[in-house]
Length: 235
View 1 (tube, helix red, strand yellow):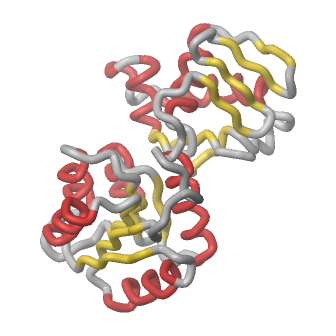
View 2 (cartoon, one colour; view 1 turned 135 degrees about the horizontal axis):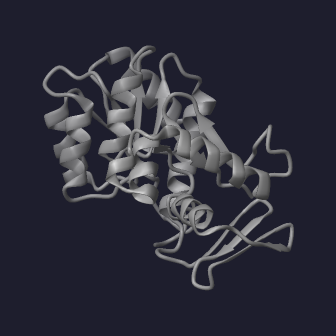
């Protein structure tokens, strides 16, 4: 996929939200940073806008007049892997998790700051523009070679247990994306373990002890409270 810098045309985003004030805010903020914005006021029109415009990313409100944002995500994911950022109201933790489980990449809770919105979009685009299926990964001081099953922190090779490595590999494959507790547990421990969040807390702690300079203040493996974890994409 071509790099962001090499594109001749502005990156196109589809904004799906039924609130005129929010759409106007997003349009002004995004267009002032050279994004092209296509608006949709409900889920049906939003799915159609994504199909017709083939955007680089989607910004989606979870509360829509005709269908839930989660259903919009499911419909888009039937044929597209476009990055999706969901907007949720305070107290919508369950819906937020459902959206991520359905295939959303990230979320913002209203009210949100424009700079945070732009940063989340940049991370999603950066992740989407990475070379597909590359076995080599780097974020900050962490380097991973998935083909050789080896990793280094600050140039020093580290050794992980089989479960620790399976967990790290999952985060590397989805770097920059929020993964819910259920997604992680199902992938690493299997579908019968999706409620065993204590497994996850223990192994996240072990992994942080090995890859973080200060495990109590992680920079790489970040907690999304009440939702899950993400592996940060650092320069």
